[in-house]
Amino acid sequence: MIGILEKLSDKARAAQHWAVLVALREDQQQVGLNHLLAGIQCANPAMFTGVDLGQLGFSPLDVTDVEKVQQEMQKLSMRARISRAAEKPDEASAFSFPFAPASKLVLEAASDGANYLGSRTIGTPHLLLGIFKADSEMCAKLERANLGESRILSLCRDYREDDEGEAISEHIDEVRGRRYRSGIGYDLHRLAEGRKLIVGGMELPFDRGSVGHSDGDVLAHALCDALLGAAGLGDIGTHFPDSDPKWKGANSLQFLEHARKLLDEKEFAIEHVDAIVILEKPKLGPHFPKMREALAKALGVPADKIHLKAKTNEGVDAVGRGEAIAAHVVATLSQR
Ligand code: MG
Image 1 (tube, helix red, strand yellow):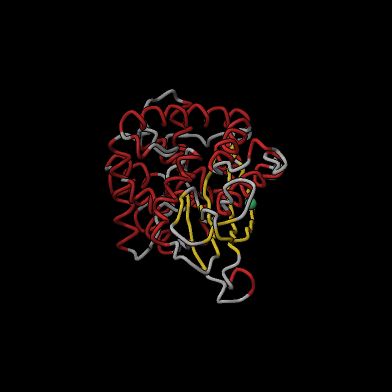
Image 2 (tube, protein in one colour; image 1 turned 120 degrees about the horizontal axis):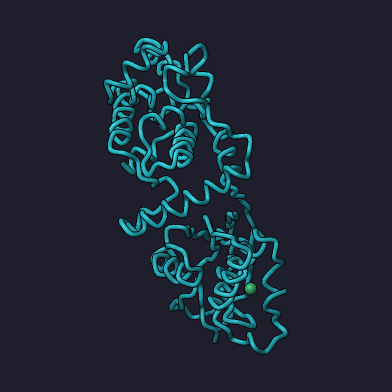
């Protein structure tokens, strides 16, 4: 199931959201085929031009009251997470509202149809085809409503991934009330003998280390600035001034833990972190798994949200001469 969900186009995902909404409005515990059909119509009304909606047994969902929809989405999200987390803690997501077994069959049939027709993604026409193939009662209804097999197949052949892209997902994000923001962070420290080299919370064996008021962890500092920047909360110097003796020799993972608390207060979630550390020597790659774990632990996120890359400076400038270490980080946050 998870593999199929990943292949859904944005519009097909939207169709699922709307389907869940329809089910919720009818106070149903599961998403049935009627709900799915109504969801497809909401996500791609053009496909239903000239179709007798009355024959299909639903009236279009009224989505003009965005605030109400938003509340229902939150309710849904909460319920879905609770049920999913109890069942499979690793797969908790907003798309886990319980679908009726028949709806799961539809997704499988839609996936088979998309494969057969040579499409990498599953779009709204494939969902329609899935309903047509998976359930004889719905198949008869669709035919009566002027949505027979040949018309559905022709919609599938006309399907273009680009047409089912971002516009809808932005709309859904708007309805779900999530906003995405990115922040950038940069840091550089001089390297000197007699100092420890600490990068991403790990002490690396090397004859030089970074000079700084704290432990001089460039990666943690750049990451902290990226997070604070994305949240509009200033920078590391504002929160941990290097004039404050409290931070002398401090473990920089503490800064990240504190930044995480500030993000929590503003209900920001960390979506992704991408980082580059620039250093002539030693090689960082072998240490990345442990660094990711240490950073992830400090931030309270899974390690797969943190991506690390290493570069040398090709012998150029201070970094290239081994006199300094630098890091660039981009962090993406979302907020309800
Ligand atoms: Mg620094």
